[in-house]
Amino acid sequence: MNGLIGYTGFVGGNLDKQIDFDKTYNSSNISEIEGEKFDLLVCAGIKAQKWFANKNPEKDLEDINNLLKHLENVEADKFVLISTIDVYDKSIDINENYKINKDKLEPYGRNRYYAEQWIKNNFDDSLIIRLPALFGEGLKKNFIYDLIHRIPKIIVKKKMKELKNDLPDTEFKFIKNSYEVDKNDNYTLKNDISKKQNENLKNILEKIGFTSLVFTDSRSEFPFYYLDYLWHHLNVALKNNISLLNLAVEPISAKEIANKCFDLDFTNIKEGQEPSEYDIKTIYSDKFDGEHGYIFKKGEIISQIKGYLNKEGIR
Image (cartoon, rainbow, N blue to C red):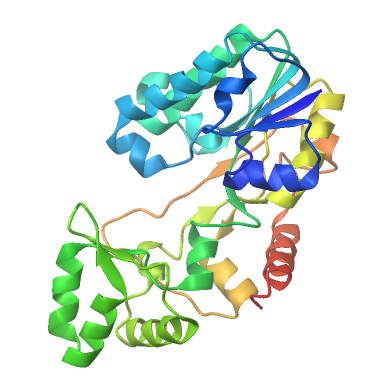
């Protein structure tokens, strides 16, 4: 029997579409897993909200422990945990052999490293997969999402006041009415705005140079992994008895993604701030028909992003 935890999330939802699991779980029915026995159990149920975990580390750890508690009486011949490259305290020139210094980790990475160790200690045969930045069906955040949507999901209170001074009254009111005030007195984009409203909002914000793209330095380099390949790569890892795997892909600059995938000349230098740089490799690239520590090279990823955009009807 095969099982999947987190089937309604981004990663789990993609896995659930790639293979028919016998049993699926999320937070609403996770208690039903207790006492079950599986041939294969995949867990993609740990939340990937970095900002929340770093701001609320104790609550984040509590949520993880609540999930792990349900697994105490579960048996699995093979347990697969979907984790993150944020468990590394370095972001360049490392692979699975790197020794992590957990004292240098932010809460998000430290708590997920803790979950990895718990799984290793409680299941005799486990595979831990560390994912980089992602794209695929159901994408809700990251630079590719920002390139698609351009409209900031959140405008902080201070910025909204600046917009009031920078825009004609009618345009400012249009923007303000497209957002709703949250519990922190910031403004969150409404879910029910029409396609026409969305286009008008985008035009106003682009005119003053304030889109979701302003938050990313164009020099930043990210590894983007296409979730359509996850089930296949998971099985390659299982067949090769791999216990820890970085799904490592060659990083691409934000500028290059914008140019080659969106025909956009994107330059945004964030003064006084170093651009993000991720270059994490795997020692198993040859098992996945990759090379030089990468499962996919830059050209392949650009083609995959274009294919994803076409599949989603975006371009």
